[in-house]
Length: 413
Image (tube, rainbow, N blue to C red; front, side, top):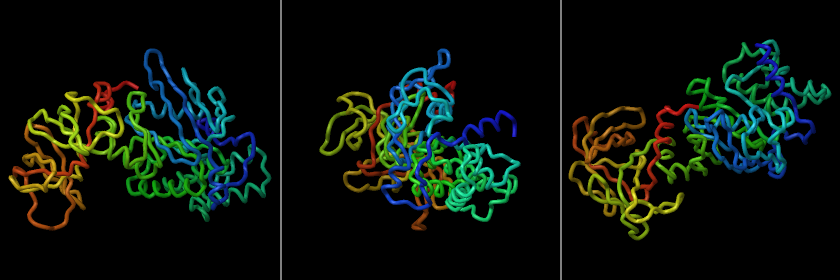
């Protein structure tokens, strides 16, 4: 380990100035509520020269919440995490932890620990000594260190690995050691910067469940940074989608997925099929939209952003798994939206088939249909009719050019 990395690891492992009651492996609901503190960012900005990397960001993260910052590279999420951890100072704004202003405090004076993608373990130390490092710097009694390290290793399912060194562990086990080392200091907030990015797909999925289980048991507030949409949805109580240094939308994963605020969120958090149009007005519980390609469509009344005015440009969208394929010219159920198209590509993906379809007017559609083994499947070149329910149709404001650049990775961080 380089001297710089060792110095940073020591800084991250240093415990808070004041001791806190032991969280234990299992806790009552009242104890869990006291384990983590709320985090508040008030109009925080960070500039590097002329580049505004984080732009007037305000967030409130509840005590004990698993909150994720999700976005593409250059979106501002890691810079936000670094400002919360004290590794960067905001150009403007305030950061409060548990109601106390920590904006100018150095990292070791914040009741915060960080887990990085690189783990930053000491290669010459055993699992026990890595986890105990911060406690020994604080001169905690050896009997207390033994008890707390034992609790943490049990929590992260590493009992029996105490004497091993990092080189003798798998990637997932090293990740657990890094997590135990951070948690043993009993922080009020744990920051996680792409901590699963170095793991293979199967292990990453396992660790997603483990991380959520551990966070639920200890009750510490987690602030998690990722560019992986599935990862954020699996683990988060709430998430914020960021682009261009701004928060596009905040909410529970299912709410953001089903009711995206704009086209960027719709296409970044999962896949979406979008059609251009103009708002005609209300039609009962839905909104009627005239499509640019011709025809009309019903969409759910927008619940996120302010409703557009009649005649304004909008986009209507539907998720690929909500679309049902029909034979050409077939009648779809009454009240459903429908559009005709031609199959360009069929891809087998195990539990389902993915269909790439060009619909009338030239728009590209993706449809995911579960493999149920019922009837012949559409093939490349076949004409099809696509149908879906209006309540599965969302209406969004179109993306700005800056958001489009972000989505395609052309933004300079």
